[in-house]
Image (cartoon, rainbow, N blue to C red; front, top):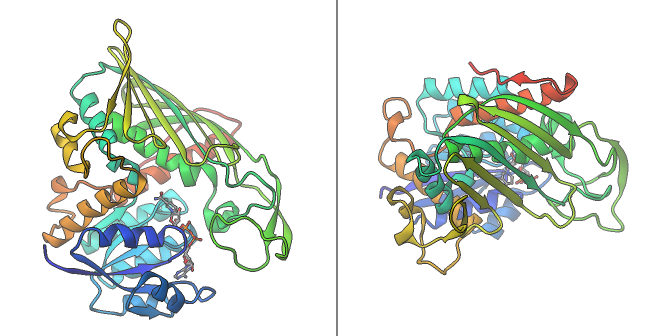
Length: 389
Ligand SMILES: NC(=O)c1ccc[n+]([C@@H]2O[C@H](COP(=O)([O-])OP(=O)(O)OC[C@H]3O[C@@H](n4cnc5c(N)ncnc54)[C@H](O)[C@@H]3O)[C@@H](O)[C@H]2O)c1
């Protein structure tokens, strides 16, 4: 594979995980990092073993030796950084959600199409081998006509009033916290597994912790408050809990909840799909098992074993059965698809049929669903169409 030089913009929680994933590919070199001025890039460069530290993302984008960039900043910086990266003629891998709003995401999708640079959004759960298997299984009609999709994505890291994140701030996280942050993953994964798009939603968003202690200085992502830390009261307007009913194209119904204030749930994404012949269920925290449900025979589970997977899913299983794979492996699978496309000189417009990773188109669609969910709740929980152009 041709060697590709890439840059990291934002190196908090998820940035280093992007670095680890691309390093596993063997043909991608992370040569530079830029962070916010509050968090020295030099320190991150040293910790991550990256050669160059830039004082700003603009300086990194001016480095002509860099072909692609990973945008791992808080959501409110995605638009500005992605647009500048496309102007600098770099391929862009942006973490989710793509935009603060669908309007921002639509503009990014358009600019990416005009520049014809490879554009990707990290909806990583698609790349678990059993999610890929489930998609193929459903597409082949093995569970019959899909009637219902349900589940949840629950976490507990925002349970206490002393827990805080930029995700809760309207201008930094977007119009929703829990729905935008993790509901976007649930919707993307459910749509990917079933091959069906969400058309309408009815939602109720709530704020379980209405006033939080916001740190006056900076704090590492997902870290608990230190006892001596300076804090101030912050009135939260964003959601930390939500329930959503959905309707998919073709009429299938759905329902899911998201919450970041649910004790004991760490990264608990669960999706069950019921069809006219069988059911299928996948749980992110037990990623090596796929539950199968039947009416007229015993229920069972498919354990991840390359030889038992649909042929299309086999390449996503990196290890033999019994050697568990998880979050980081799926993330690496996603990066493998993106960088193989870049290395082979893929054109996102003329080679669109060869793209096997989520693009800005998927990022835009996800933003459209989140916007509709926020609108539905604000309107008193009325059924609301997902507006997509
Ligand atoms: N795909 C996933 O499962 C997943 C998981 C976690 C986070 N994310 C997404 O990744 C993004 C980052 O989240 P996080 O949890 O890593 O956040 P974080 O707060 O831990 O890190 C943000 C980083 O961005 C940097 N930054 C801020 N402003 C900047 C600027 N102007 N220029 C350069 N760097 C800047 C900060 O210095 C920090 O290094 C978010 O969009 C989030 O939704 C995705």
